[in-house]
Image 1 (tube, helix red, strand yellow):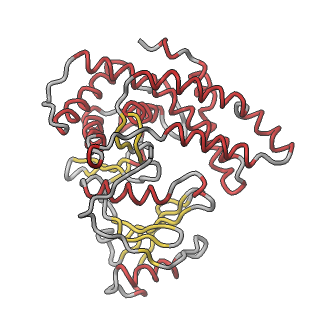
Image 2 (cartoon, one colour):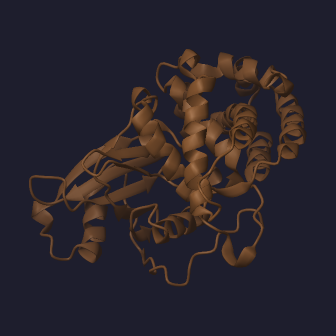
Image 3 (cartoon, rainbow, N blue to C red):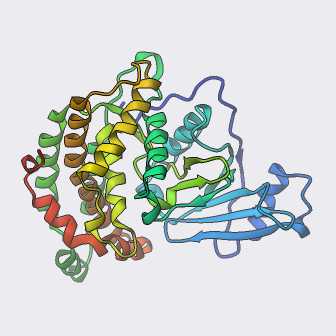
Length: 357
């Protein structure tokens, strides 16, 4: 199975607590969870800080005292997000990554979310990931993810095409009123166009020979936490983690150089910057795989070509998820963010992959 992830036998068990947290009034539910996770905390002294309050998730930090030291993060799933996210796979990925010291501890799951350890540090912004000392840390940390070996010599396969097919199935299933379809057609490519695009991308990219590794698959700036005191970075949010093409994970991250709220693709890393980034990555990746740390120019060049071609498919995957999101009323606000860079994305999708040399 393409999405198969094996949790090590020595990984600690993760309890399931029968609690549902109301995202409109989250304190009562959060306190029920803390009664199990932090029984010594007095409910009257618990403070709750809202870190994010979006459509897809709501993230709370629960703590006592005056500083964010021992913090229990409570993530409440957005309504119907299970249609887009495999929650069982997310928990498995979380546990595997924690076992390899690549993720915080997962304390528990509950009926509509999960609780986990707070990582000290600051979430990065686009200007930070363009800074060479930081992007070297990011490259080496991503190499740690990609170097995690599959269980018992199992040869993993990418689940990217499965996910795209799932999004297309959602689009077909949730098409409804004519006015909805009219609005959809004016904003994004047609279903027929997306199907053709999927076939073209799969045929063009599977021949590149990019290794299939355990990927983060959502390396946004806000998902990278920098601890200045330790001089380290860690990645958070593993909703989309799974086996995928190595070059996809890197290309997806390179697209983040353009920014989030105000997208400017003139910041997409140029060739010299990419070569520095990729060399740092390959040095760490080869060393972690027991292949030495010497990296040849040919290896860097090969990865450069693969990454820039896969950078195109990241925009396509966004397009597919955008359309399926659009057709779910509870998730429509997500569309507003995704479509800010639509013009650039569609230009890339029409671009001949052979233009990348």
